[in-house]
Length: 145
Image 1 (cartoon, rainbow, N blue to C red):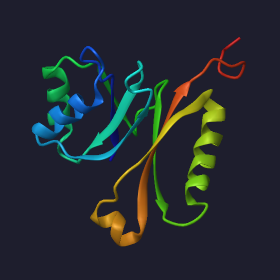
Image 2 (image 1 turned 30 degrees about the vertical axis):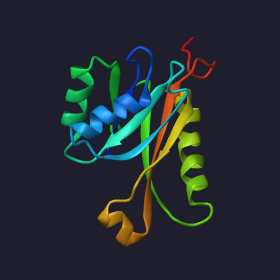
Image 3 (image 1 turned 180 degrees about the horizontal axis):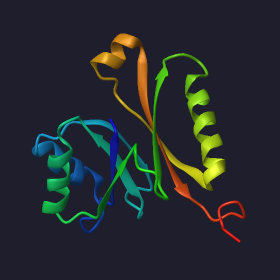
Image 4 (image 1 turned 180 degrees about the vertical axis):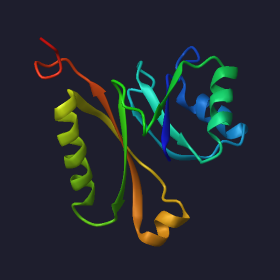
């Protein structure tokens, strides 16, 4: 779960069901999905199962969806953080607080959060994967003089 695909589900009219059906028909299993305003110009964010990333991108390209791939290890203007949190009260907050602190230093704010399905190792250790997607904003701290 080290990357996230963000796509506009626009097929004229925008249709999330159709995009998800096309991914499912191609055998792409999603381990996290979310988004906001997905049929009103927003993005659907999803994480394909490990090893299915290329197939997911092929489907999006085949059907001419606009998309972008964001990786956890990239440090561009957009930032994707992965936390594996305990399934206990306050664990998600601790993760968000850490990301928010890092965001302050880089002029970013949190755009959205995806809570994923734990894989076998995460289930065994009681962890839940969480993607936090942040974007650059213009602030006095982020603009060079």
